[in-house]
Length: 144
Image (cartoon, rainbow, N blue to C red):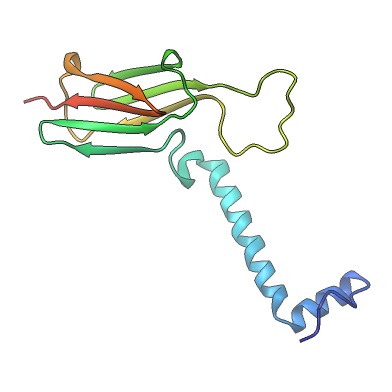
């Protein structure tokens, strides 16, 4: 099989070579998918998944337990609020230090907020939380 890019000298020849090998349609499909994802995320930022840290909500019988990944976040930088059946977790991830220029970044930084809808009412006065090893665990006793 020949290399479709080796002899391409202009856009028309390159387009012909790509089409001859069935690559042009594949690239067009990928570009269209990217365009749709960009449009979707522009209209609905949460359309591509939850904003904020990843979490699990578990049913422990007499309580709900939320486990949320917040690596690099100090406990003093976290706030929790219970509003009816909505638990709100907000915090700040440290940004890059002054004088340091990132080459690339994959980890989110700065402020974040995550809302979790609870399946049922809880005893607000009995809610407890602890942070260990970058994992926030919130114990939410169910209201009887």
